[in-house]
Image (cartoon, rainbow, N blue to C red):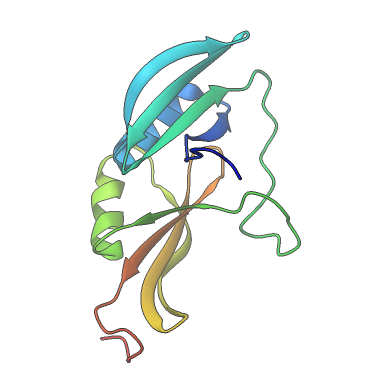
Length: 143
């Protein structure tokens, strides 16, 4: 049996740490510490009840298409619960000078016995992020 195990962080490699910080702070994270990991820049971001580590990769290659490749195995997406997906997307788009990439526009999905409105966006490195809204009618028809 493990003794006192708890979540610590999710690490994300990025091609440009400054753009990644801009993106994730717009989602609600704040930089809590900056440091180096070997020869690369890194930082902790905290917020939304979690901690992320961003690490800049020298000479980055494009990330695999976790969203579009149905045979991809591995990290799929980070999921953030919001109270209103469409409103969150509208507010988020105002925070960036360039449009955010929407992989899946807001769509109602039944997951288990509940209805959710979900959308997928991607960060500047192409990593998928799910935005999920719990609809107030478990098991019933969406409004």
